[in-house]
Image (cartoon, one colour):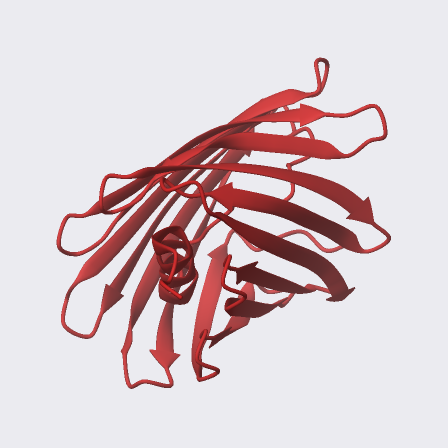
Length: 233
C-alpha cells in the first residue's frame, strides 16, 4: 500500500518537534494585564544532537503570543511563532502559527476555535506543509479532572484522512504530561510523549520521547529556566 503523503508529513512534523499547539487545548481567558516570560536552556538528544533553546511568551487581554528558536550544535536554527486569541464573551478564538526550518522551508497554520454548549471547544482550520500543499484539520477538546483530551482528523491534499489523539494532564506540583498520537490511513502511527517539571524557582526539565512508525524511539532532554519564575499554586 502506498503511504499517504499527508500522514508522512504530519508524522515528520511530530518527530522534529514542531507540531506545536495544533491540537492543544484552548486557553482560558487570559488576565487583562499582559505579562511576558522567557524560557532559556539547552537540550541533548539520544541521536547525539544538542543545542540551545529560547522562548518568549506574552499573555494578556485574551491573547497568547509565543516566539521560539532552537539552535543545534552546528549553528542551524529552527524558529516557531504562534498567536492564539480567545474571547470569553463570545466563546470564540483564533490560532495561527509559522515554523521555519534552517533551510528556509516554512510551515504555516490558520484556524478558529468555538466553545460548544456542552463546554467542549471545537477547532478547525488549514495548514500548509513544507512542500506548499495544504491540508485541513478539525478537532474537539474536552476538559478532564486534571487536564484535557483532544481528538481530531487531518485531511491531506489527496483526501486521505489521518487521526490525531492528544491528552494533557497535571500529574503533580509543577508537573505535566502530554501524549500525542497520529495514525495514518494505512494504520501506521507516530507518538510523542512530553513530561515537563517546573520547579518553584523557575528551573525545570522536559523529556520528549518520540516513537516513530517503525517502532524505533528517540529522546530529547531539555533543561531550562523561566524568568520571572511562575507563581506557586
